Length: 250
Image (tube, rainbow, N blue to C red):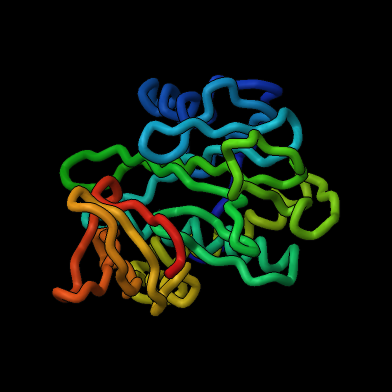
């Protein structure tokens, strides 16, 4: 499969509860296909990681879900997240000429601010990921954010430019298709290397918190299962998503 072989079928909505929920319902009804892309101008119940909500002004940002049929083994599921993150980082750098970093597990960081996030939902059968829903929220033209979202920003806010949403989406499609080709070709280490090369705080000290309290550690990377690797005074420790929280740079 070459990236030119992958095609998108796009569905536009003025409002949905959640593009991920819409995609999930279609998968359950066996009516969703590889490449189905659902874009909504507004989500009334958009989701982020760990049951958080995704807040967005109507018509200002890109809110979408892409259905994939990767048919890869379960142990490779985090590579889908890495490939999607890689594609969005590359897109953002093309649009802004600024360095974009990937904050584990799936936040997009520009100038130290979060401008996007990814929510992956996998569906399994007989040890394989048969369907995957790639949910993306990318802050594009929104410049005002709730007071409690002090680290939120957007492309427009960081560049003082306004972007046509359709152009941003059309620019992302071929970039993602190229990374999806790497998934289909099982090029795991290439996907992982690109992710590592752009990992937020990699090789640097930062403050974190786990069930035992706050601590300082150096970000070493991410393993194939998607666990964050932190170098502590006692050695390198692996953390799952809900086991550790980033507090601040050291």
